[in-house]
Picture (cartoon, rainbow, N blue to C red):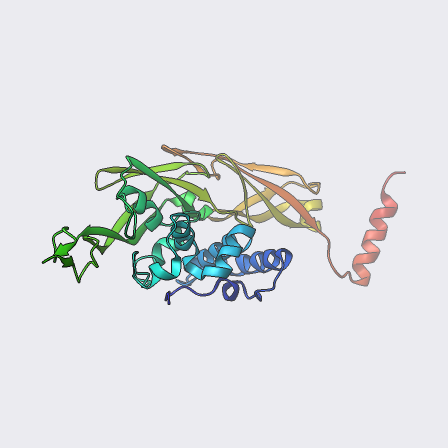
Length: 328
C-alpha cells in the first residue's frame, strides 16, 4: 500500500468527502485569507500551509482530478499514467513489473506537478516502459506542468524534486539474466530504480503558460507553468488589480489608507470626495516583467467605501444637518 507524508486534501480544507463545489470553494477562500504569509508575518509555517491549501483546492476544485484523487489518493497522477500504459496500478505498487511506490520519490514531485508528476516526466525522458513485453522508448524532450503561487511568480522560486529513474542493474549489469535464470535483484528486467534529485529554478515574472527549460541527462525537459489564483489580486499580464476598503469619513474628507501589494502594504492618499469604485494606479507595484527584472507592471487599486455599522445620536444629527444643507 502506498504511503505518503502528505495530508489528505479534504482534511487540509476542513471539508467532508461529500462536500460540493460551493463548500470547497468557500473553505478555500476562508483558509487562504487566514493563512496567507502576509497576514501571518513571522510565522515560518505560513508559506507551506498556504501552498498546501492551494494544492488541495487545485485538485478538489477540478472534477476530473478530484475523481482520480478519490480513487488513488496522492498517487492519482502516477496511477493514471500507468493505467494508460496498460500496467495495473496495484501490480506496479507491489513491485511486479513496475516501479515501487514507497513514497520516498514521488511525494515532493506530486506536490509540485499538476497534470503530470516528475516521475511521469522522467518516464518519457529516460524512455521507460515497465513490465515484460514492453520495449524501451526514447524521446528528445518531454513536458510537465508545474504549479506555483502568485508570490512565487513575483519573487521567483526553486524546487528540489525527487523521483526514481531506472539504471542498469548492478548485479547482472543490465543483462537481465544470470546463469540462465532471471536476475534476482532486478527480476529479469535488467534495470533497477535509483533516486534522482533535480533542482529547478523558476524566474520572477512568469505567468500561466510560461515555460522553463532544463536539461536532464542531456535531454530537454519543458516545464509548463500554471500560476495559482490568489484571493487578493487579479492579474493581467504584468499588471495587478486589487480592492481595498476605505471608511466613509476618509472618502468624504480625504486621508491616507494602507493598500495591499505583493511586497507588503503601502500608503495611499485618498483625496476628499472619493467615489466608491474609483481606481488608483500605483506605478511599479505590479509584477516584474519576465526577462527584465528592472521593469514592473502597475497595481490598480479600486476603492470600496465602507459604511459605519452604528452611528451615535450626535453623528446622526450631523448627517441630518449635512443632508439638509445640500442644494435641492
